[in-house]
Amino acid sequence: MKEDKSQDLKETAILLKLLGDKTRLSMVNMLAEQECCVCEFVEIFQMSQPAISQHLRKLRDIGIVKEQRKGQWVVYSLNTESEYYLLTKDILNHVPSERDKFVWLEKNGLRIICN
Amino acid sequence: MKEDKSQDLKETAILLKLLGDKTRLSMVNMLAEQECCVCEFVEIFQMSQPAISQHLRKLRDIGIVKEQRKGQWVVYSLNTESEYYLLTKDILNHVPSERDKFVWLEKNGLRIICN
DNA sequence: TTAATATATAAGCATATAATTATATGGTGA
DNA sequence: TCACCATATAATTATATGCTTATATATTAA
Image (cartoon, rainbow over all chains, first blue to last red; front, side, top):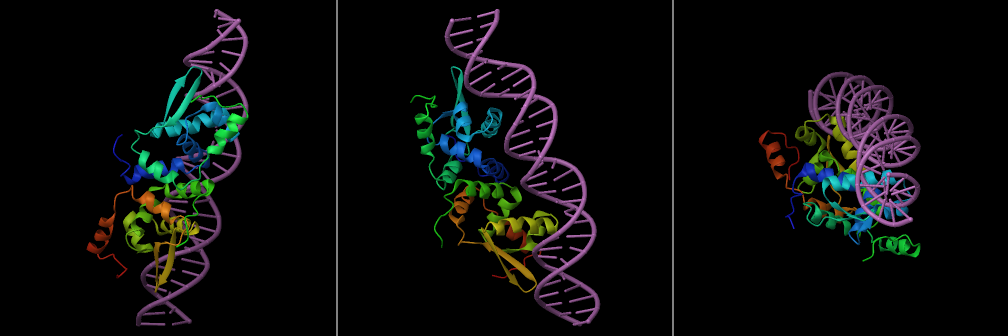
């Protein structure tokens, strides 16, 4: 793991602004729990697929999440190598778990990832 | 001190967005070190007084800073009673100290607060 | 009271952001 | 190959944000 290079105020502000959106914060919070694919997020957030994609792009651009193609799906996960990983985890400690969202996905047969 | 009630995702996102501005993040970071009055911030950030005032208002509205009038000056400080205090401190741990800004103020005879 | 200083608020403007719809790209399986 | 599904990108639009200028308020001191 890279060391905590978030030690730059301007950069940190940019990260905080990115996490300062309830959809993106929730996404990152979920990914801290389990990986998740785009179509699952679409179901969870009741939002258009492009909107989800654009949020994920921002998170990916700053490096706190990473993507991996699995067949026709693109699976996102937290990037533990990110220079913002430690800060992100510290923030998520102040946010309630969203494990229930994965339960809901499974209940409704919408879970893609088999782990 | 109130307990950590930041445990609400939407509210937390709002806080993060507020801290996701380099001026406000820096303000809070400075206030974690020492209290500071409006005119000092104006000097530090080379920004108009209304701009500074508006940033401080946002921080005050969400409760992470508080104000206290001292004569003709209004002195701001971190609100340790805030429900976001713990989260804020955790975030500031990832931001470098700005003690030098206070030193600069003193050097230039711009320091108001005498503690 | 009046002038000077510090701060807050209001209005206006330029830019940023987040959503939508339409379209493009990429993988799967017949 | 083609049809289908998942995802990404582009263009557009509505709204939010941050700054500026102008003005109001509050305190101090003469």
